[in-house]
Length: 377
Image: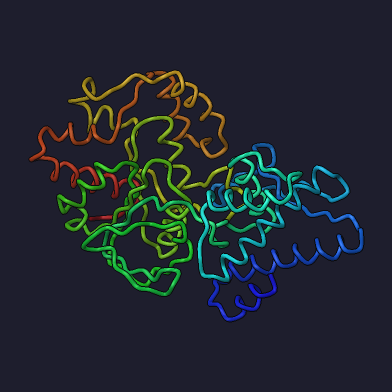
């Protein structure tokens, strides 16, 4: 640990990394002092669940500040604290080495360490993940600031220049670039786009790129890949802070509504973290009003019945804090009443032919961006 801390003094760390390291070091020091003096050691982590979070249209989800305590005076909790100590040591050494760890790396490391201490056996990957989550709630920073990352998920395309976490500059044209778990540490150096469209699925993202729709409209694209990863959401937040209008495009389903809202309003599970939602973003479609307009001629062909899970999701959405405005109540009520859904591919069907897709996409996006964001493209 001492060697790692000496190395860290010479490292180029972000502000969030510096704060995280300070908190982790204090945690380690506090634990050692109390153990050496046979004193009970207690720490507090933010509580994050449905009953302990608050929602605001601008701030998104935040914790109420309620905490849970763990203490060495309880043998079971003392074991958990000891496990956290191993995890903290591993993370500090990872940052000192300018390396990264995945959740799986952390699991194998802990599993290997605990071979020496049979009384500290780890109950699989799920327990390791819970330890990482607990650590996040102690330091109140994203695990990515500790170089604990997920597999890259998401793509960005457009006339945007970015400085990554290592100080390297890259542009997101003429090829799309991967969005890593460390994207929250990136800097948007410059851009020449009128808006950015985060898109749930691959097909429409690639269509808008290959058909030159994005280039001709002067917009950027982000591929969410379903439920967006934290790095993707953090990058959208950074782009929004540059006053770039953001218009989210997803399937027309109860689950896709949640994808859009995770971008715009955040999520309960990440209520203890900041920088993961863009409150100025807008949802542009596919929405219920499209059924009788843009999809009118093909609706019978492109509609699908809601599954039982879909129906339950729509019903549950009606009680979610971030879906209490009139717009989202209407959208979820539509699903409950009609029992139908469709996907982004319906837009290509509505075009009538692959040869007509480009013009259809351009008309659709021009209309939506003007209506939802006041952007003329």
